[in-house]
Image (cartoon, rainbow, N blue to C red):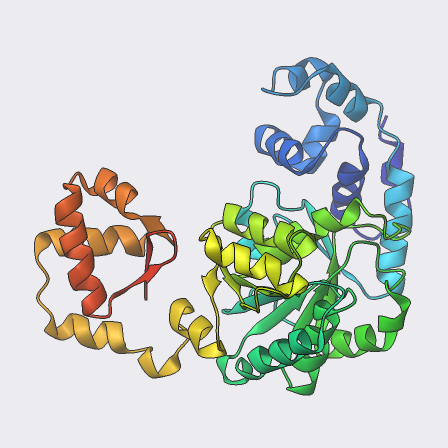
Length: 374
């Protein structure tokens, strides 16, 4: 039954992990549930069908896929490719796996990474936008990334034409680490014109994908890619976008992950400003006129890094204000209604406390009547 244990691979655990991602019917959510119930990837494969069927949400089709798996030889091929090309596999239980993605229910089970950047850097920001970027879009992209030079950030994008490529190129020219998230395997670069750029990124950042070698850049892969771009970062900046497109999909996903979203506004008559303007209009993104806006809202303004600790030494907060501040600190972003519900204070008392805390520089008001702590 376990003939695969004789396969010539140096890491049997990795063999199980890769094989697990190949089994039909096991996506990211189901896969994590199976491992949670069974204890490990190996245990999933060794579990009996009856036991698998007792796991909530696991039907006969999924159980049969696991019992009748034929994925280990393909997994062995992938391990050989990984070793040959010095690629780092990152299973979601590994310490080097991007920890921000663990907060995303549909975060990938497995990632493949080639590069030097720390995927768990303290500050990570994604830049996204249209493939048909205008000259103004490129200028804005360059200007905002120049503003990140002293912020010690990792810049993420999708290595596509347009804004993605401009973001990566500018990051490299400014000495900022940058990671490209791919919609295909690491055995190719798409678009091919970005091969030199990709090579530079491996030395000053990296390339990341959830797709195994041999995976082509098919259209359906890119929405999946976009969720990683959104989830791996603290914030997403939409530089330029038409009324629809991948950048807006990424922004929507980022909002669903409770990430900060920024949009650079443009003229009402510009086609590739429609998406950004609408995001701002419907409170799905904060308006970003300069890099300082991002630094201020994200609390990355180093000149204010000690404001909270200094103020807390001298400000005497009321019990209600302390309670509200504590709730905000425990949440990345939270609405006044949720604060009132958690604190069991009236909305008027919460509003009063928020006003004082914001005035004293302890919290920041965000679009959509949300609040965050510095």
